Length: 343
Ligand code: KG4
Ligand code: ZN
Image 1 (cartoon, helix red, strand yellow):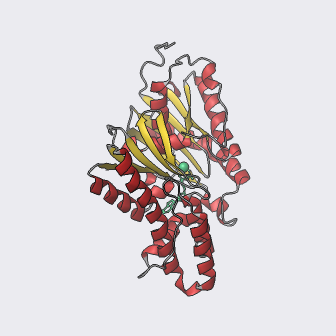
Image 2: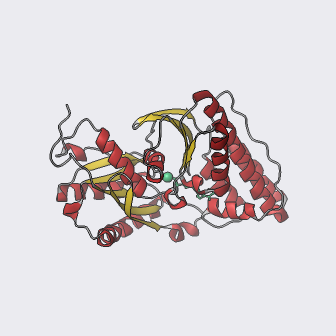
Image 3: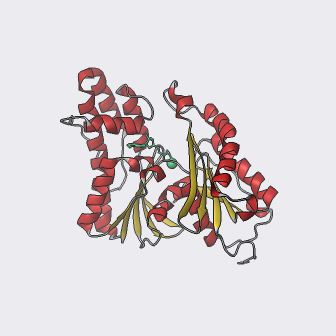
C-alpha cells in the first residue's frame, strides 16, 4: 500500500552518510542533483604504514570523524536538523564494523530528529553518481562499475532495475591495481600512484589477459601475479610494468563493454567506482561510446571514489521508489551487511 504522508511527500534536502571502507563522508544534496556540501575525510595516513586498509582502525576512525563532519556539513550548508527531509546511509557492501558506525549514527539521528532514514547499497550509490553528472540520462544504461571490491558490468533498465551481465571471477580491478602498486613499491593510494607511474613510461611491457568470452566476466588474478613477478625480475623497469598492467587491465574491460554495446544497444554508457577516476580508462570508455554513437557519462573524479553525495542521490531515488512510505519505527528496521549484491 502506498501511503504518502506530509512528511515524505517532497524530498528537498537529503543528508548522505558513507562509512563502508576508509573514507568517512557526509554530504547534503538539494533536490535530485545539487550537491550543497560533500565532505570526505580520507583515513589514508592511518592505514599507510600497514600497506592496506585495517578494518579495526577504519571503524575507530569513522567513530572519531563522523560527528565533527556532520556538524561541519550542516554549518557549511547553513542548515539545521529540522531542515533535512531524508537521511541516506550506506548499509553494505563493505567492512562490517565500518558500516555499523554509519548505520548506527543514521538510525540515532533519524529517531532523535524524526527524519526518515533510507538504507543505500554502496554499489547503487556508485551507479547513481552518474545522475549527479547528468540528471536526465536515458535508459537503458550500460554501466561499468569498477572499484576496490567490484568489476561489474550492469545493465540498468530503470531506477532500481539492474541486471548484472558480468563480474570478476577473482580479484576486483581496484584490488589488482592496489596489489600491483604495492609489488612495484608504490605508496598508498595504490591505484592513483600506479596510474601516475604508468604515465611516465615511454613503452609498455606486454602482458596477456584471460579471455572469458562468451561471458562478460573478467579476471585479474593472473595479470596481477604476472605484473608482480615482473617487478621482482625487472626492478629497473617499474614504469614499463605499470603501463603494461594498466593497458592489459583496461583492454579486458573495453572488449567486454564493446561486446555488450553491440548486443544490448543501450542509450547510455556509464562508468563509475573508484577506478573510474583513472584518465586512461575514462578515455577508453568515452571512445567506445563515441564509436557506438551513444551518450557517455562519468562523474567528476572526486565523485568516483567513495563519497556521501552518491549515497544521498541513491537514497533520494530509492526513497521515491519505496512503496512503503510509513517512516515511523519501521524505517529503522535495517542492518549493515558486508555482502550485499545490487543485482
Ligand atoms: O570506489 P572506491 O573508492 O572504494 C570501493 O568501493 O572499493 O574505489 C577504490 C579503488 C581503489 O582500489 C583505488 O586504488 C582505485 O579505486 N582507484 C584507482 C584510481 N583512483 C582510485 N585505480 C586506478 N586509477 C586511479 N586513478
Ligand atoms: Zn566504493
